[in-house]
Length: 88
Image 1: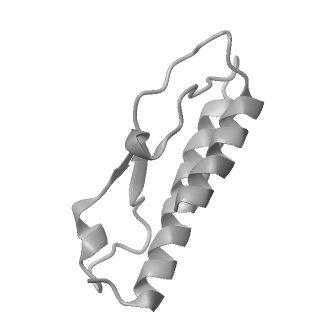
Image 2: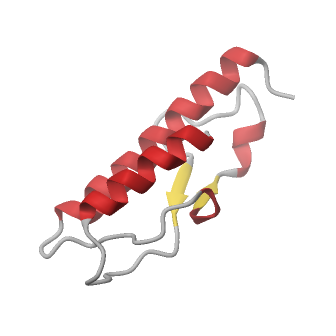
Image 3: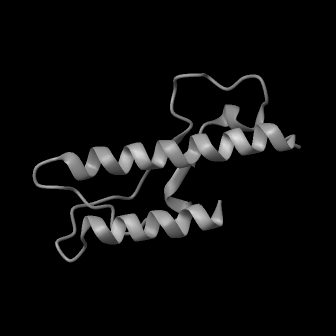
């Protein structure tokens, strides 16, 4: 099991990695929207469950399942990101 300090740091890093991925997608021209950001669309590195083995600069979380859907907007992605944070 994870100790509370490790868990808090881990959740912050996951949230930051997802935010950075969304920022990268949204900064392209034209912006790419994810369209279906849920916890099942976030992959985690295996080292996440091993305290002391977390790489300091390497992303722990990566997004999958994104696409350029014309019916979606970056604001919808941001709303879904907020919902994801509540789940974390």
